Length: 395
Image (cartoon, rainbow, N blue to C red; front, top):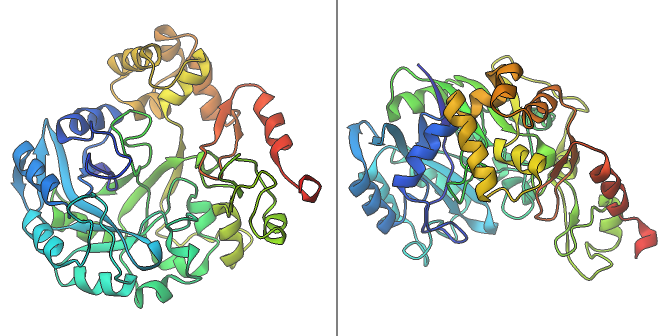
């Protein structure tokens, strides 16, 4: 069975997460995106585990169901050097045992626990419990594994189970790094809210024998991922090197010369694009034979927001998004499969935007410094991009 799965989200207990990140909201929104399997997130938080038990029915072998949506236990842990690790867990009992075993001062107050354990120590601990583990958003400048290490083996001591790419990278970027040829890539949303432009914005199409933890583990171990769906990397908020205060894009070499300080007084953060170039072994990606296709996506609500010049969470945008969903079923079908002619019958203003997305003619101002990239159907944003690229003359 072919399943669309998003393994990395956060609950209402995580810092900066929406209080609406509850099973009762996550389940129906995930179905509308076109997902069949969702990670619970935050599965080391005792209060969240209680809510999961109260809100779902256990189907057996690590799968919990609510509103015809299947969930698997997952969590993100912040380890030594502030590196984030994604863990997929066999069942609630195991999650509770690991939560008790993990040395962490905030595990009952924050859905993402912090610990002083290294990547190698976390790997050894969770492997005793038959879990899967890998770096979360591996290249991001604040908490990605490659911010601190030039090799994944220096972090974990041995091979983890997967590498999560993060919103600011894709397969084409990651496969310029030779050591990653042996790892399956995961693409997940890291959603902190159930809004349709967040939940399921990245997901994996994975071949499972049945809906069970055992099958999930076997598929990842056997690299049986059939497709990765993810944002155009330019839209990621750490794709380019930029100031975290004014968000100006800065030439990385200039940033280094100025000790990562912007002329505005803010701190410049190295972008994923440049970090990958530092550790890359090839100028062009070399995909291993098992590597599946990578399908670039843009959140439908973001496209609607740009067309109608309204905020992405406004009633106007959400009403038009829901109208399209009511007519075509899921967001993935609208973005990838539905005919432009049929979409035009429902919303003639949005159909050209979806066609431009499919034809790759949308203009993107890259994200950086913590600000997401912006999309446009004219060249105004491209002009702003050029104006914000800082050189020595700006210091």
